[in-house]
Image 1 (cartoon, rainbow, N blue to C red):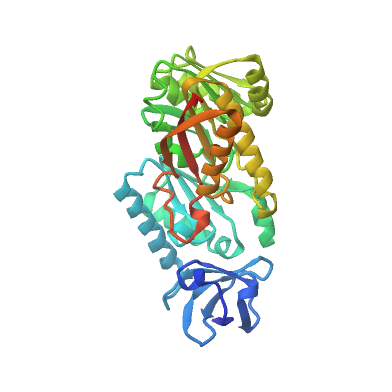
Image 2 (image 1 turned 120 degrees about the vertical axis):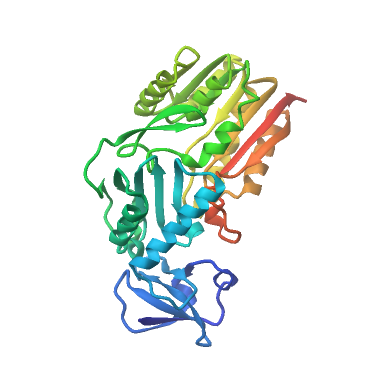
Length: 391
């Protein structure tokens, strides 16, 4: 196996367990590896650091798979996926869950989502993509699934020199799947929906709204397929309006509402949330609960300031639409905006809106997306409920 030697001065995160090794942290490579090959990584003094896969085309030169001197083969991936499944069973996430969450399950750049007996996978780097047959084999052996689908239609693969693609990794099946969550039914479009078709990471947070929405008039912005809004109706909201810019998402959201017999309480409309929040604030519209769950505002460090400004703006607008003593439910999935920075942004929005806020709850993603301390990319979701009142 080709050996990679690290420089003397490397980031402490590598020693402390982070699997990413950047090109400028490498002193030399003994040999000429091909992109995606397994390599042995050693510290500058020659001590063994781990085994990972290399890609000279990527900013992250090596991603470590193991810190042990062990064979990386089909059995390795079988054991890793089985261990990930045991964790989900122990923590209570079995029917629908993120089975493998990349670095947090010690399988960098691999995502596997489980929807009942169907699985959706993403192999987001060349090194892990080469092991796709072994990963599919492991899923088949552990679960005997009804179907496996890949959603590798993501731009990040191009940074690894790979093409975007999607399709069946099993016999073809109907890619619109019915799942149950918190006693509700949702149709998941794993072929054409965002990411892998459904946002499993908000599972617990959708339950967290159950008390604040009882008897309330609720507005939800950036609703996607309406999961928060349908939960609000289910938990006793008086009326719920959900808005999203995507006609396709709104159609699916209204279908999901009907699936649960809640179409008389919750309605979805295709509208630009940024414009609506601003215009309705000027018109003096008022709600008891406003829920904001926007997409990520940035994926690069250069535009963090713009992302923060965007979060501040929509949260300020959301607060202005609340009746005195109402509740703001706000989420951010932008990995580069830290939990502390997110809370500071909400605080700034409240000050500019001349509102007092009182925190009800502040959560991360569901536990099937575990957080590894020191790996910031695993601690990405911020979910906040605050009571908002006049000063």
